Structures are given as structure tokens and as C-alpha cells.
Image 1 (cartoon, rainbow, N blue to C red):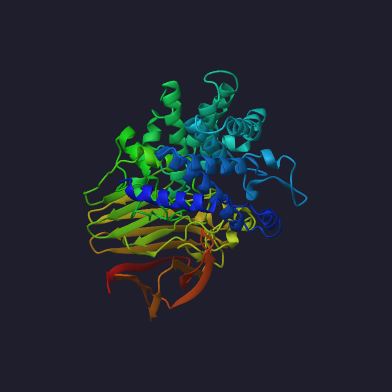
Image 2: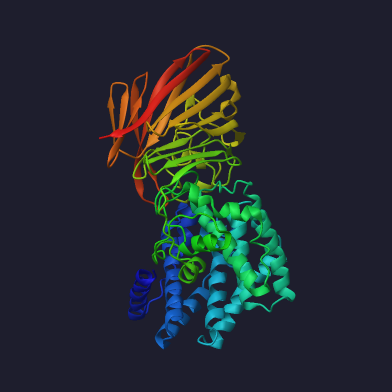
Length: 557
């Protein structure tokens, strides 16, 4: 189970020991973020340096070698020399300059860096020089511990991955290098406890992660890593016994489609889930998890975070799933309906929810439909993280976040609204041959367009492998234009009023009652790669009360 990972680790170690070069962090990365908002070039170098440290530390865990110790000490020293452990995108800025407190600013990655350094010191205190370990402990104290306890940070109350990742990372560092049960450690753990409570509040009783399964792995992963270490140090499992934690642990079982693919709502991006985290959830909570055949590859996380990579190595256990997956599940708190059938090779998911969610997209009433190999109607997931991506005034101009980038209608030339709007009366109920998803969307559009009611119904027939979409409108006046809008990344053909979305093995046909136009759009994915999507649009002129009906079916090519 570990063989492939250990071979990858060995090859990476050999490369570092041969080249003996620690990746540089270019000053241009700081400058470019201030001037253009571009992040990826600096972050590529930043994470290459974290990979360097992680590879050598995990290699030292396998075999104690003086050459590895020497290389590890050098990269750790360079990390201690960094201007800031936070990314430029998260640093405080005034008058287009980074503020004086930037070197001690705490973000996700500063906390992760401190956690990595502290755990490495804990693991290899005998091998590392006192000069280095003293420096590391001093830098963690200066950059993390003191700033954390001397002020209240906004992330402490964030009901998203930030409270879990930052709080857990600082908490793990405190458990590893501070004296148990006294002084500074106690102060830190009290604040971490608040962070953990904030994170758990981001979930309803259904255990669904509204940020998507990628952020489940991130936030919940760090929550679990801290909870397990806290139990080991204090013989106290307080963070593992909450019923909600068990519900959160089973979330991926409902939404994973394939090994690296899941229902792509919110800021999802395709990736393996951490094998160590999945194995822990199965062992501790006795819940169904996706299949674990082997440890994740070394490169499964482009950020090369030490905590999950170490625990993949220590915790991963083979888990083979032989049963055919049949899922029909409704997450009531986030209003997601999911239907998956291995037997019929069918995947469907739809969402209600709000438009002020963490990592929000304008996607209330949106749905995806396809097979394990192809989501014919899809969701673009997370885009490239830039300054504009997190600017609320500019965020929804980007296709991946916009209403246009989701399969929801444009009504009277108006898009769905951002902010504190939500679906009403959402439900997902099973039927003899599938399920019916219903939601009411009128309140998610501007009131001035006179939309009195809009009910979306998605009737899924698992056996026929089709959806019957019905959008029922009620307006204050006659002759309203509605554009039914759908999004795909597959090739599309139009024949009259029939659309054919072409997949690798099958096709998806959509039957409209009005002419269809295709609009090509480009977007940048989470990794900065330029991609193309196609909008499928049909325009309807509706009377005061009228229903649009569209049939969508998967067929053999």
C-alpha cells in the first residue's frame, strides 16, 4: 500500500540531495500581487519550498541519514528567514504597501508552516541541531503564538475552513513544543477551543460542507489532526465525540463520484481526498467512506502540507468497496439533493441554499447531470484565486462564480442576486424510479422584475436515465422574456431544437421547444489553466403564468 508513495519520496529526496538548492521566494511575487493581483507565480515557489522540507522530513522518518539532516536543516533555516509565512494575498495592505505587521501576520499558511516546523522539531529533536531548534521555536513564538494570544483575530469566529485550519495548526504546534498544561499552552488552547466551535457551527446537523468536498478535506482534515493529537496528549477525546463530527465524517461518501471527482458545487476542484483522513474516519466513527486502495501520491496536494502527508503515511489503511453505490440523499441544511446509481451509471445533484455562503457562487437552483465518466451538465467549481476573486464587487464578473456560469435562468434580462437571498421550500424526495427535487426561486431575483413565483422541479428517472425539468413562472405582467441557461465543458451539437452534448462513451440530449443558441466562454480554473465552456441557451416569451418544460436524457452514442 505504501510502496508507490515511498518510491516517489525516494526519488524526490535524491533530487534535493543532488541539487542542494532551496527554492527561492522571488520579491517579484510580492510586487506582482500589489500591482496586478496575480498570485500563482509566488505561490508556486512558496509551495515548492514546503515540498522540499516535507520530503526531507518524511525521508528522515524512514531512515536516519546525515545528508538528509543537513539538507533539512538548510531548508528549515531558510523558512525561518522568510519575510512572512503568510501569502502576499493575505497580508495587510495600506497605501499599496504591506503593513509593518506583515511579518507576524497569521493566515492559513503561516499557521500551517508553524505546525510543520513544530512537528518536525518534535519528531527529530535528537537529530536536529540545538541552534536550529532554538531558532524554530523562537520564530513560532514570534510569528504565531504571541500574535495569536495578544489580540482577537477575525478567523477565530469564521464559520468556514479558516477557523479549523488556523486554529488546529496553532493548537498542534502548541501541543508539540510548549510545556503541557501551563502558561502559554493553556492560553492558546482556550482560543483554539473557540476556533473549533466556530468551525463546527459552519455545519448543520446534516454534516454537509457548503464550501464543497475539497474544503471538507481541508478544514475537517485539520480539525481531525488537532483532535487526535489533543487526545494523545491529554487523553481527552472531547473534539471527537460530538454527533455532528460523525455526520461530517460521512459527507464524502455521498458526494464522491470517482477517485478524484465529486459533486462539483461551490469552490470544488478535482483532487484525491487524504487517505489518512478517510482511514481515520472509518476506524474512529465506523462510517462508510470512499475506497482507499493506497496512500495518496506525494503530489496529491499541490501545497504539500506536512500534516496530511505525514498522517497519510501513518494512518492509511486499505479499504475496498465492493458494493455498487446507490445514493439518494438530501442534505437538508445546505439544501443539496444527490442521486447516484452505479448500476445505471447515473449522477445527479441539485442545490437550493443561499447566495451568501462561504466561497459563494450564484447557483441557487443549479444542478449537474451525467455519468461517472462525464458530467454533461456540470459546474466549473473553483476558479483561479486572484485578488479580484475575493473582491465582492468583482467576484461575480468571473464566469465560474457568476449566475451565467450555472444552469439557472436569466429572467427579464436579470441574473440571480448575490447576498442574503435564498431558495424557499426546497425538497428532494424519492420516487419509485428516482427522485424529485423542488425549489422556489422567485426571491433570488430582483423584485422590480415582477416575478411573483418561480418553481423549479427536476424529476429524475434513474431507469430511463433522464430528467424532466419544469420551471413554472408567475409574473405581475404579460410578455416576459426568460432565457433558460445551461453550462457544459463537453462538445455540443445542435440539430433544430435538440442539443446533443457529446461524451467519451455516451451522449446527453436536451429537447427544447424554442430555438437554441450556443455561446462559447473562457475561464481560468483553480490551477490557472485557461479552459472553454459552452452556454446552452433558449429564449422564451412567457405569458403571466406559464411553465417551461425541457427533457434531458443520457443515451448511447
